[in-house]
Length: 120
Image (tube, rainbow, N blue to C red; front, side, top):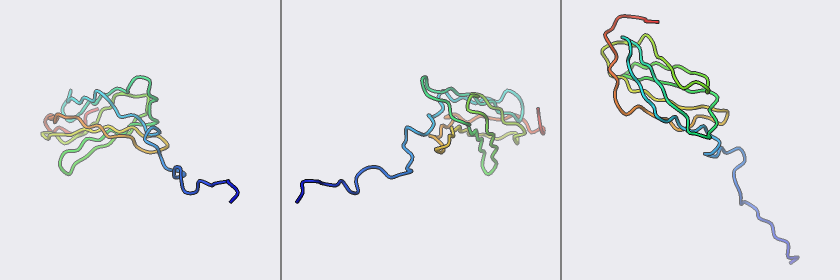
């Protein structure tokens, strides 16, 4: 033997996304219904973390859902024209070129106002 060894098969998988490459989760997520059929959603980003390229904000109530995508520098979104008199659960996820980060969901359920059509 020559004393030269090879380390075959060890290391990382080429192209695999590392957790640190994904966007940080939204923090301090809140949702309120300032007007009938509207949800106002706000959040923040951890200090010293790069903002994602975009945020996906989704509200779900039974089989109904609404989604809006906003720029990564934004920390607020409004969802309009929601069917009224329903409870909505809201989630926010950051996205970058590596994929989506962790999803954060509002713990409380938000009651949207009376059904009255599109506002905005």
